[in-house]
Image 1: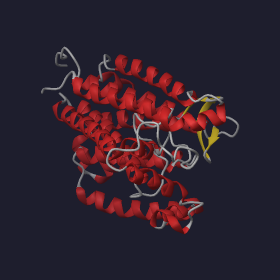
Image 2 (image 1 turned 30 degrees about the vertical axis):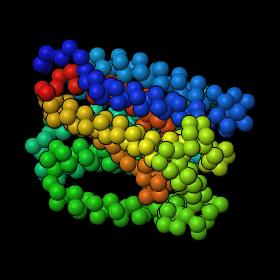
Image 3 (image 1 turned 45 degrees about the vertical axis):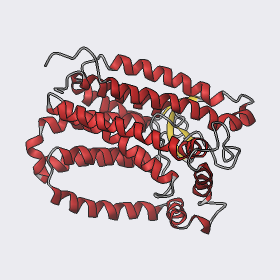
Image 4 (image 1 turned 30 degrees about the horizontal axis):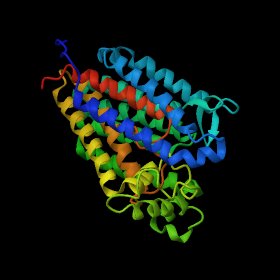
Length: 366
């Protein structure tokens, strides 16, 4: 193993912490009215977000100093533990149901989402598998099929909750990793066709997913039902204009846009800070993506490279899906915006993942 650099990638760290601070401010701004009404405490969500941000930053700084090869050693065990958690969360009376999905484990308001942990576990294990079997990946039976079978098995367990959004991010991330490892494009074409048929089947099997598709195509067909969220989101983004209405001056957060501090926080940000504010956030995510790609290209070994690709792909896919949903370019999926949206498990795991990426940056050849 090459000697580490004196410091990690400070540009990546700056982008991460800046997005985190923006997220803390926007979580308070977006949730204050709802928190005051429901909990008689305008800082209820902000305090919890600050707590998880603190835990996440401490974890990120710690993980940043742990040799990323450690993840290769423990990847299999971590994956097994995450599979066990996915089984446990499905047990009635054990798994907590929120938003129609049995996706949470915990006591009261403090809980974890095992599917979020599975994303990072799968990235670490797949990076180990691909680095050890890269020559086999061109073979469908010996390389591609085993890796995809494991991914789809995990996806199936996540769908039993059900949680299509998290499952889709995990699958998309793994597909990017496998493609980058050298898998044949022809295999992906055929698998893409099969996947499309499967996706259509998943949508057709659940009436609420069909409603989401119809509301995506024409939200005004059901403005008080399935189209309500996207209509209210667009009502937030539109009035924001170039400069925004001012921090804290959102109108849509006053019980028009449901749970504005979570999946649709970018809509409130755009309403209050305008196009310029939204664009600056996207610039910060662009910097994060650029540095992640740079780290992946400069990693000293295949495992580090695939691990970096997986982490940065996960971030990029979540950002694209969330922004697409908020702006009406994609159907509603329930994906948080990394580092900005309210959420304990998603925020903490994202910071841990970026801590791993920062550790890899200490070994890069650039």
